[in-house]
Figure 1 (cartoon, one colour):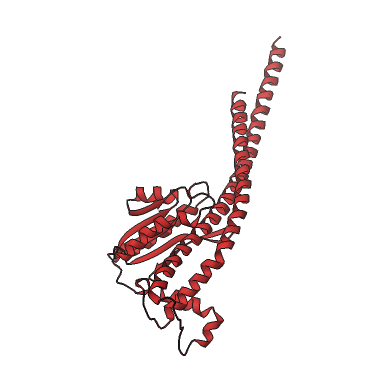
Figure 2 (cartoon, one colour):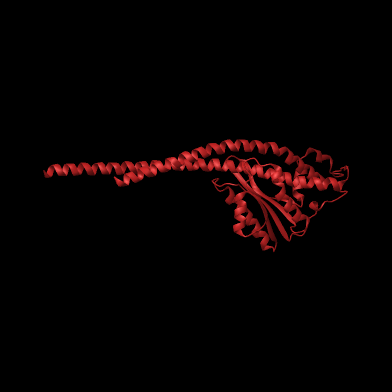
Length: 297
């Protein structure tokens, strides 16, 4: 019955693991709801400032900021948003695969690459990958504040200002729904023309701007306002990406832990069947030995 005891021990171990994964599933579901609330709370500001910046890019400019001017891309920077912890399925690996696919396309054109990692997983990955990691921010937690991200974002903005990078892209997991999270790469700087067009076309107000374009009166002046506004624009988009990535992380972890619990249940059923067969075989053998001994007497 030694084999039966081993199987029984395996069943007990898997049941303990199943209890842990079930608890983690419930915790992730609770955290996901709070993360979705934070994501929804920050969405109006991020969308509105994106819309305003899009309108400004189409205005008759008194002053044109460097963030609005297209350059020849010799070096590109990526702000990559990942999770701090694992056990969330293929969320991070799919994101890294998407980034590397984009990086290969740029490197084939002779363009250099630099990274800013927001999240422990991204920081560890790019240090092993061997990329030029300009900034990293670990241990963001489940409810990061915008001012915790500003330092790393400013490093990339300074690199853009100094001409060290000519384009800045944002990479994160877009929260589609609880079952689906999609890794996307979105250009932040220079402000892409197609994004400006799509943002403007979504507004009913643009129906009356086809003749003269957008017009603004700046106070105190265009340069002072745009220097601040466009930095706030980048910061708001990065923060929105972080809170959306956290919601995606919790959703992916909830699904991964549910699948783990279900798989553990299937394994327990299989092992229980093996145990019953081993126990039946042992009992049959004992009966055969007793009957054989009695016959010999």
